[in-house]
Structure formats: C-alpha cells, structure tokens
Image (cartoon, rainbow, N blue to C red; front, side, top):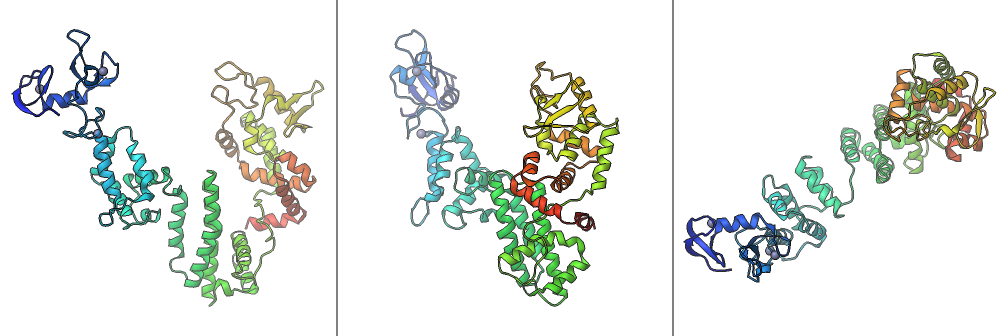
Length: 485
Ligand SMILES: [Zn+2]
Ligand SMILES: [Zn+2]
Ligand SMILES: [Zn+2]
C-alpha cells in the first residue's frame, strides 16, 4: 500500500495523513468511506470501491482492477476488496485468524479437528463481520464455550449445555454445533423429560431409583428419541411416558413403606397394591412387562401383559348417546355431525375424515347413500343418509378460488380441506372426544367383524385389529368399568 503522507485530501479537503491515488491524496476516513460503500464499477459492472480514473472513459471513476492499479482498498493479506474491516485487513482474514486461535490448543498448537465443521461453517458466513462481533460482544458465550471445547476443558457434547442457562446465545451455539453435525440433533422436549426424571428419582431408595432410571431411559426415552427422529414426539406421547414413570415411582414409594423394593416385590404384594390403587393398573402394565423383559423382577406379572391394551373410556351406551345426539341435534354444525358419525359408527379417524373427497359419497336415486371409506361402498344407516344428502346438496360454496377441489369438507383456504383442529373443536363442543369415540367404535366393531375386514375398514394394521378383536372377545363391559374407576 502506498505510504501515508500528510496532505490535503482531494475528496474531503481535510489536511491529514493521506494515501496517494491517481486522482490525488486520499485521507483514511475517505478510504474507509469508499471501501465500505462499494458502487457498481462502470467498466466491470461489479460492486467495488470505485476511485480510480478510467483509461477509456473521460472523467469516469472505475475500480482499481479496471484501472490497472494496485487497490488501496484491498486487504493486505488476501487482496480482496469485499468485507473491509480493519485498517489493513478484511473481515474474512481477521475472522480466520480469530477462529484459528480459538480452535487451536495453546500448548500443543493442535487444531481441534472435531470442531472443524464449525470453523468452516463460520468462515462461510455471508457477513464475516457479524461472526466477529458474535465472538467478541458480551456475553460472548460462543467464543467462551467453543474455546473450552477446543482446549478439552468442556466435552464436545450436549452434556456441556445441561448445566448452562437455556439462553439465546447458548441455544444458538448449540444449534450451530447440531447443524454442522458436530453434535447429534437434540429434542428440547426430551431434554426437559430428562431433567424431570432426575427430579422424580431424587429421594427414592437408591436401588429403585436406579431401576426406574433404567426403565425410563432404556424404554421410554429411547423410544421418544426414535420418534423424535421422525418428528413424531407429541405432548400426549410425552405425557404417557411420564405417567408410566410416575406409576413406577408410586409403586416404589409404596414398596418402601412395605419394607421392600421393586426388585423384590412379590405377586401378592403387587396385587394388594393394585387393590388399593385400582387406577394404577393402567400405568403399571408397561412397567411390570418391562421388569419381566429386562429380568429385573420376573416374579410379578399383570394380566394382558402381552400388549398394552387400548384404553376404552367411552362405554357403548355413551357411544350410542353421542350417535343419537349427532343424528338429531340441529344446533351442531352439519359437517361435524356427519364427521362425528363416521367416527362413532365406522371408526374413521379425524385425519382421514377431513381428507375425504366428494367422490367417496354416492347419492343413489332410490334415496340410499353410499360412502366408500376404504374403496368399497357401504350403505349409510337411516338418519345419517339424510344428513349426508342435506349436506351434499348444500355444500355448495367452494372456496374463494371458485374452483371445487372435490373435498367433502372444504376448508377456508383455496384448495384446502377443513383443518383437523377445526373439526375436533366442533366435536368437543358437542361433547364428543374424537380419540375416545373412535376407540369405542373400533372396540365395538372388533366384536362384530373379522380382524382383516376391520383392518381394512378402519385403516389400521392387521396386527392392531387383531389386538382389538382379542380385547373385544373379553367381557369388556367389566373392562370399561375398571378403566373408569
Ligand atoms: Zn478525505
Ligand atoms: Zn471494475
Ligand atoms: Zn483478506
């Protein structure tokens, strides 16, 4: 770079240290100004600091390259003019130096290869300036933690974050490590469950705490993690896992009062626990089965342990009450009445109901109404047929797009069907809980139809249908009574 001499800047008129350009002396403030505000060079049409006289055009300024000059705006290290930053070097070169320093062990001088993807990702940043300020500006969590990891003072794992506040810069850093593949993806919900578990296990007898910890981690958390990989962790799934763990914790507390532990629990003891806590049977089912499988305690068992029984919380009479209500209560929105009846009578899920097409419904001239849930048309029972007929004739208004996309239950947005949640809330308002209603219907159907037919009709795997059938073959009125304790 041309040495600075004291002169009057041709651009701003201030007399100070200047650099010599073909146009005359230029002060450092003006140099900075031009470097930070690149313009389109009239010759190469690139965004560059433009301050050099053109060879070919009179009185026109172009970039240094087009003028065939050495650029006073270029980085002294890499020669590039983009990302001006310091007095002589660009932001990219400064960032490179800072990150290299951060990721290199001060004693061994070795670069931490495990963190290299993070280094590369940060170096690829569109604005290296922003990365520099992220590294420097308080709280500077990124620089601090990355440095500790690189020097081996903190493990390069999610554990490092377990004991940190869940602040914005912490989670930014964690996302960065995850996005670059340095750390496995993590699930905040599962992590909260881990913390919750630690709290629940505190205060239990050591043996039981370890045993329930294994149950929670090996059975529930592992399952939650694999669900998380497909993005299928929902609140109910987590709540169910928690309630199973709570069940185990309760059993342990009871066992402790009886002077025993879960591993030593006998069948008569388990039965006396269940007699005193009949509601606990449901959550104990999975735990007791696990105790068996994992050989932690093979002396105790619970009936129906071959599978977790589907919970049926709606009795048949309640189900028929709901059917009656939907058939006759005109205050309930028509589509909700029809959808609810599809659920209660044909065990259709809300998810498949909202996606039904008008082509799945046929209005016969003789008054019969046929609906195909699974490809085969079945005749609708009296009452429901009238509702479907009324609805089909008045469904009328397709969405504002004006085009009918053929949804049986069109939604508000062009080309969309009704949203599951809208449907659900209508049914809940009418006193019907979709999940329970469907289960009740499946349960009842399972008693009447062979499993493969049931599987087709309700769109579930054969195996599930068989489970339902097995269950329905039992005296399930007693079963329902037990559930509802
Ligand atoms: Zn100036
Ligand atoms: Zn140019
Ligand atoms: Zn540079």
